[in-house]
Amino acid sequence: MKPAKFDYHAPASVDEAVELLARYGGDAKVLAGGQSLVPLLNFRLARPAALVDVNRIAALSYVREVDGTVAFGAMTRQRTIEFSPVVASRLPLLREATRWVGHLPIRSRGTIGGSIAHADPSAEYPAVLTALGGEVEVQGPRGRRTVKAADLFETYLTTTLAPEELVVEVRLPAMPAGSGYAFEEFARRHGDFAIVGIAAMLVRDGARCTSARLAAAGAGPVPVRLRAAEEILERDGLGDAAIEAAAARAAELVAPDSDIHASAEYRRHLTSVLTGRALRRALKTPRP
Amino acid sequence: MDSATVKIDPLGRVIAILGTTPQGQGHQTIVSQIVASELGVEPRDVTVVDEMDTFTRVWSISSGTYSSRFGSVGTSAVALAARKLKSKLTEYAAHLMGVTPAEVEFRDGGVHRTSGKAAPYSIKDLAGRAHWNTESLPEGMEPALSATAVFGFTVAKADTYGFIAEVMAVEVDPDTAAITIVKYVTVHDAGTIINPMIVEGQIYGGALHGLGGALYEELAYDDDGQFLSGTFMDYLVPTASEAPDIDIAHVVSPSPLTTLGSKGLGESSSMTVPAVIANAVSDALKPLGIGITELPMTPSRLHALIKNARKTR
Image 1 (cartoon, each protein chain N blue to C red):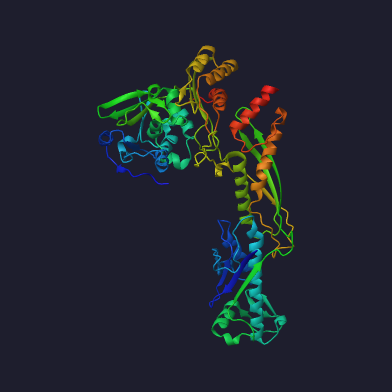
Image 2 (cartoon, each protein chain N blue to C red; image 1 turned 30 degrees about the vertical axis):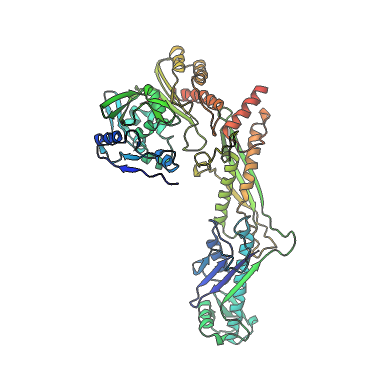
């Protein structure tokens, strides 16, 4: 199929892009890597009046570490992230999650800002952003603001951002040295969106767990931080019993829907199974 | 039934015209190979016209490439047409040499005297003479180096069945309901194997098709009759990433009913894979008393079966 007719703009700066978004008053879509938007256009599930192609804004592509935070330009490609030395050493959880994103050609085009702004609850990056408590910097007609992960996702494919706001940067706190991590995912085929995915990070002090981070993808309309499960680990440590209790609790914290690929009950069950697996693997994979 | 025409142009180029149209089964490769082998030329010397129109073809109800019929019926017509043409070339060359057809033989892309030192006639040479010098033809021989054959089974129940036996080992993760194919062996008897590479491709394709039906592909509707799997986002087909390693072996018992002894195997494992994987999964889940009776075995469905079985035990 072919998309409905649309105007096309390829601004060279963020200011210009935001101005265009404001001009169309919510009837324009931002084109980043296009890996989700273009199929939606072709199926005519999305029929925007205009596309604002931000691929020519070179200033939106970078990976920088500043004071314990890793900042990504919104247009940084997933393939760049997969091979970034900064990501490998500071955010190995993100690197592991990236390998679950689609296939190589998809990762070569897909961007971190696009994936997060698209807000597919089954996608890997929104889950990592949620688990690690990251934030995004957005620019709108009235300037810039910061939106925390917990305040960003509203429902399926919908963020709390205004239509004329553009994600310009994604920031994730560097994982503490020695922290364990794992991204577990179950999908029907290699490269498909997750039926359920679990992002996990554990910070340990001897037998104690000083901080646990868990988030689920695919288990509801938004990525879900599994705070009550994290608390079990922070309180009871990382023994088998605590991990099993946290995994069981995780299933109670999600509200998945049924669709053609999986029943709600199965998704809930997978949330528990994959949480247990992610935690057990996280015990064995410390960040350098 | 299927028809084929093989002809030679004035410059000696061989052209084979088919009565069926391929959708990627490799007709050009197979036909150029058969005709080249029959006439003693190279496959690159044979141009294959793999298009089809009942207005222009001899056999007007030749209906297409399906039911593995090209590998048995189509190839038979091609080989027969090539043999007819070979016999015409032989007769013509014998006439030019002034001997009987019994005193010449067709080999290495030309017609040779069986005894004596007379120079052979190559196909190219015969093609030029037959076209530009039609009075050189023996009395009663039609001009044009062209032969058409229509092949059909004339005996009732004279179908050519291929045979398949398969063994598969799987692991089922009882927690996620994921199925992993550990080992898959498939043994085929497709009669004479015309082209091993194409046969391997057909088996992989058939097996993946079968795997699609067993694990992924479903025309799903909701309770209101709304179609749910109308795009490839929801109608999942296996991709290269889902392809297992396949151990392939052959038993060759040529068919007495086809020209080359081939039986065809295009669809082969697409029929067996759903059965073999469902049996393997049933075997893996035997301790839970589960037998698979419904396809596709989606993880969600398999999970429900495992969960119910555990509840009742």
